[in-house]
Length: 262
Image 1 (cartoon, helix red, strand yellow):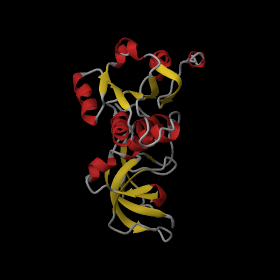
Image 2 (tube, rainbow, N blue to C red):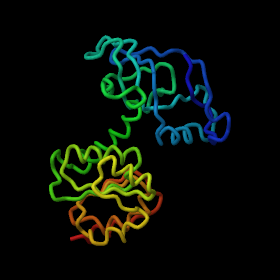
Image 3 (cartoon, rainbow, N blue to C red):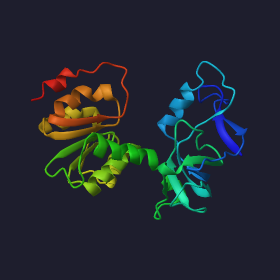
Image 4 (cartoon, helix red, strand yellow):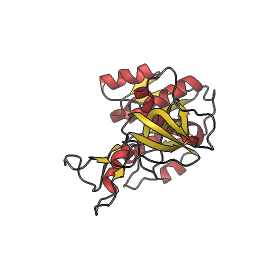
């Protein structure tokens, strides 16, 4: 089968940074599905792995990346239940296995779901990682409960991005929070409003635009520039509030600023 991958971590501007390969069609275990890939999406994890996997050496076997995918089940493992050949499915893949930049992929059935009937294959492929990240931040990390948040506010920094777009919708559909999203351009402001945000503020002017919200925001979901927004977040978050960040920072942040919240 054909697949896209690399053997050296080169700048994307280099024509050899991604290459087409002819590799063996995978054989699946008893717990896996063989999926014929119909659509994929590109995520930050794709370029991060491409940058680091063969940074100082050329690897012998091409590294096939890609995690979000949608496709059609071609084979079903002997231990797999609830899936049949011909099912349309979608999933976020397994970072330890060859990815979905390929014609076929074997994937553990435990992390696969049937494609939503209302969405086409391309739309479905765009959802898994963003939706899982948003859901886990809201319900698993910040411990928000469904239908919770009455008379409370949540701030989403980076509301127009992939995770932010999904988080706004989840919160408006399943909780009672007042959702404040950040955006700085007119098109992204309008996008956040379309997703359902109650208010949209400029993340370049957070302290100014939210100066009257000091200590009244119970939750902050930060999806961009953790170190750049840290001081403002510590000022805005209410005592005993929750902050979830998905972006790494190489700079030190002042945890004492949170300790002083009483």
